[in-house]
Image (cartoon, rainbow, N blue to C red):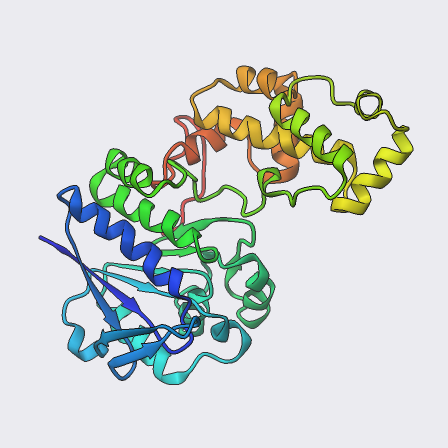
Length: 329
């Protein structure tokens, strides 16, 4: 049976929150896994996106018929002011009868406004995570996650994270190979697991200082090399104190903290690529399993082994055999 996916939209909706997930599902259809996409709004007809471009042909919740998966798109207006009552009523109407309920970015504010996320973990754009937590204190906001699954609710971070979320939904329905084929077609990450940070050294703003640009490239090229402060200062031909000042000026951190984050990013990817903990520790520059474990605990609150089991695919996490884990219903 073709899955029917209802996108809840409204005036001011972020275009990519709709078009990104829709394109993932369109590509799934090209692989022989069809989804029927329905645009749903409070009054039907046309809505205007945040770019000013219109979305036409929306229907009301009553007109939508059977909906298997609801996806509430986001928009800055949902975080900046109370969610419109008619929009909340629309979300409630379609979410009540859906098997699966998802949100992109600030769409989580609509789900939270209905109490659907009370006692549950949820994600939203990092810029709005604090507002979501303050406005809805019963929601367990995870400000650094790309997407979070709790029961039948799946919430994601901002904008492009909606693509990651939808790839995870396709993996649920049709397997990891289908999700990977779609990711390759869209030229996006083959696997960007839900628990991966919204922030990464890969996304560090380019240094304005030419000296730092060269140094950063060398660290990223070989995180396992000697990147202690004295070695980095020698490579840059400056004093350790001056190098520390440059890092503070550019990124508000120390060279040591930045290098640790680079190595953590590399270790995460190595684990997802199938490396053992020992191998990931050695090739990322941490050296020992224990040093890697402490870094994971400090930054991610999880062990390397648990991370690998939890995020080796976009699908639901099952704890390693023999471990004890709390599972939310």
